[in-house]
Length: 430
Length: 142
Ligand SMILES: [Zn+2]
Image (cartoon, rainbow over all chains, first blue to last red; front, side, top):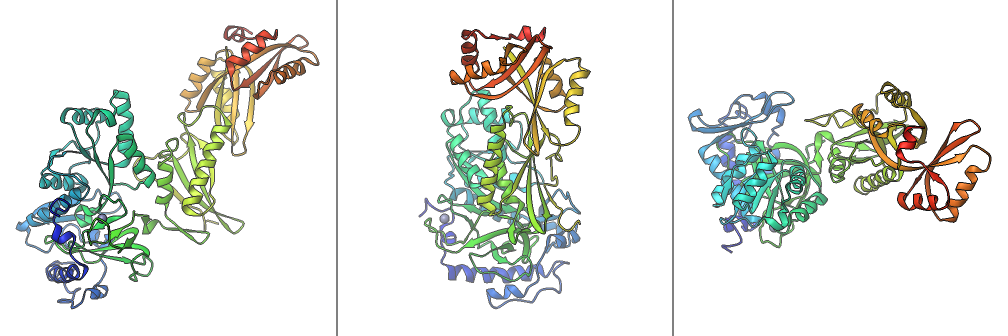
């Protein structure tokens, strides 16, 4: 047992005891949150049962923005040691503050997550996520050090240097975005290094962007490693909210630190396990800035079935989409992320696509426009028609709607950098 | 070896004139041009006097271009010439993916451009059959 778990007692705690612990910590959180400007007067003194969480108000991203810069801080300023802030591409930035103990708890949760994937203190961990205000880098950096792994704070970018570091220091585990992992493999080939043969790599921690099971398998095959899916958000400190164990069937949410609910994004009504809905989290161990019923906007389902790994913390599915992005086409709920994941898997497509929804003869139509670039084109119709058919079949299987795939010239779609608009809904324009 | 450039274009007004204009501006002569129309998009195949430059200038314009070797078969401009070649290819079991022709001088000579899967094999068979296939230089100097 000592070898399997980082904090065995907590990770395998029976559900009843875990819920009692949650109730205790929820009341601590409420008491602390009542000290902040934002929650003052909005919360009861305490709750008697865990289910009473449903009577507490939600907290939204907009609330976070409106409380800028420090309306949700619940402790005296001198107790705060760190802040992380979102880039604030739309509207005002969101800021999360941490006390010394918050950083400590966060590091522990990250260490626990990494240990769960099989990482040990004998590993050499190369962290290829951005450091700085973005939480992905620092979160797992502290986690890896807590775990005792030799940590290389490589940060993102500079592929040749990444490869050199891996070769020089015999990296065994790395933290990377899936798209960068695929890109980096191409650089490996150019450099004449076969990561599978020439490096002792064994574990990749993937995060920070949506990707499909197919992409995971591809990365595992190319590098000859195990790749693990992770979930986190800066509002819940960052990475280390949920992580996959070696069974890779859903991500265990650390329920001793986060109270998880799934709600209907339209009505706010709590759903039962197994139903797809919006994830809502309440921090249970954060002093600096406790958050009550924070609406993540992320759509997933919860699996309460026991996991063969022995951990009792429930698992969430891959994130299916963002609640704000949900489209209803021909009566079917569709998230652009579902389409995105599929297109990302097709190397000829990459990021150059646009989704258009329209009404033709009173019926919804879904058009996916794909740019034909030099890489895709070898002068034959059969190749282009084959690509169209492949995309159509993959999409139909995933979203159960027959899309129309249209090939367009290179450069005719809006550029893919940043948060370009990839979905245009023309219904209702007429 | 003769070659053609193939350009991917959306089926909207002005795309063919765009391609031909770029070639004209760069003083390239178009020997032959065909369009495979697939509805929402099409492929423009162009044989020019300088395929290397044609590919380069079209790419520079941001167009998606591919280069393909084709066989240019010289034939007499008279009834039955085309049928002779077609029959010969059929007999030799050479599958033609695309074909188009152009006349060099009325009543004298014409060139048939054919796209095949196995370029080297087809060219060898045609030469052996007594047909004259054009070299790169011949095509440039037509
Ligand atoms: Zn498990």
